[in-house]
Length: 168
Image (cartoon, rainbow, N blue to C red; front, top):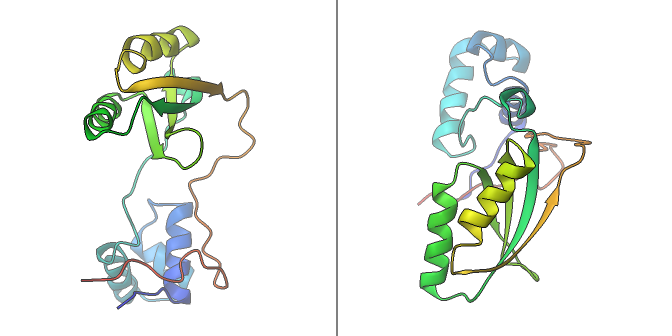
């Protein structure tokens, strides 16, 4: 049976996206519940998989990672060994923040951070391009970020969160 979110669940999730450190008491006030029912709903949302995790977002440039790049990667082939090699590389490299298998011309899209252009070039030439499974990499560098959010839309009328995973 598919699990759904009601209006209060969406309000809880929206508030948490704004401030994951909010106390249960403050969260309850903001969504119009008392503390105990709010806490129970929050635990259910976690258990049902609507909340994947909680995180602290760091300021990349402030911690010495001003370079943000998107790399489109094409593999030589799609044999299991090639995919395994690539997956192993990606899993081991902390510079790679995201890796998405893509439809279209390229096989993967990576989001990568680096401390400098030299550091990115070193990562690319000594790790990615040395992997036999990789045919080509096309990189685009972020010049300026116009919008960045981790907040998902939770509008009641949209399909964004109308249904979640089915439980087994």
